[in-house]
Length: 449
Image (cartoon, rainbow, N blue to C red):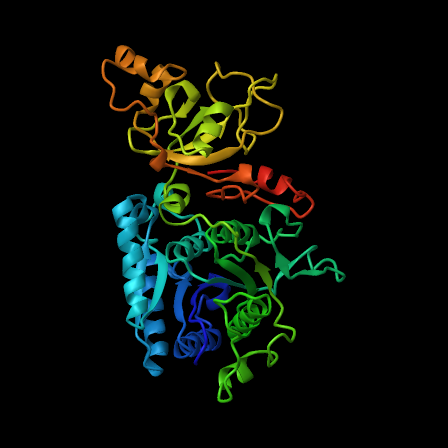
């Protein structure tokens, strides 16, 4: 299609979307429509990645084989090549491995292949799991700098109240910032899945921070994907985005007519969905990898001066370190948390857990906020010995000085919360209730991993 911008679209399918909850049999009617949708998008010139769940529902290793055979048969009827990619967090914890995974997906897309990504459940243990495929899909979308991430689920969109309980619940169509969201996300997900609506908010926060438009919509009508993309691109065209051309439906597009609930013209009302707008200053490449590709092994508490220095692109010096929590080695990732200068309440992390050490300085009445991640030059024990000291004293205290910095600036990634951007995405959320999601409380009440 001439003049059309070709997009990269990630489609995440939950277990309940493709596997029957009671019989655990594949939902062939839904899978067929998903395949038709993906192939239609490919024929329009777009690049498509599917993050497919459902293997745990069929017992990991056996389920992976069965699921991929099913995908291969369905796509084979339309002569569309596919490739399976299995990931664990360990696969992207190393920078080279992360880049290899990134290059592999990009090369497959360039070859016209549709990659099907899933967590390697047969090998993953708790310490190296992503936790759910919502998070995996967001990391995948960010890793390849996708344009859209579709989180397909069993509801049309987010609502301000539970629509099953309150008939007057209103749909939430557009979210500019997840931290300001007031929605009912009390659904815990099906018995097959590993997450519910709250994990989708985590995924939306992570993906939008990387500049990916994220959409929640109903999985039973996958033809809506093309219509929603067409609508969003039309909006961008009207708003003067020179890189976006409206996507007009083809005259011979039977998929849109057969699987979508309505046929769209330019700016007519799209299928019901919730759209999370991307951050205007996205965090990408190495900064994103530092923030979200690595599991934190501990916490370094820094003073406000050190935080300002990091924001000004300086490295983290030992004089700015207030305390250390956890056990970690050199070149492992840690959280960076700012310790308020003066207060009277013993510090707690965002999940409300008191810090383990008994000699922590007093902290503010507000929960401590994670401001970034870093790869450190010294172990936890070494940093505990040199905290608060000048760099010239490291040699005297430790007997050696590998670096004057606790962490080099190139190994530090800030959430840029101080500039008003979205805060860091938690690794694993607990619960987020609609009533608790007031304008800043949503970010404060979700635990950082």
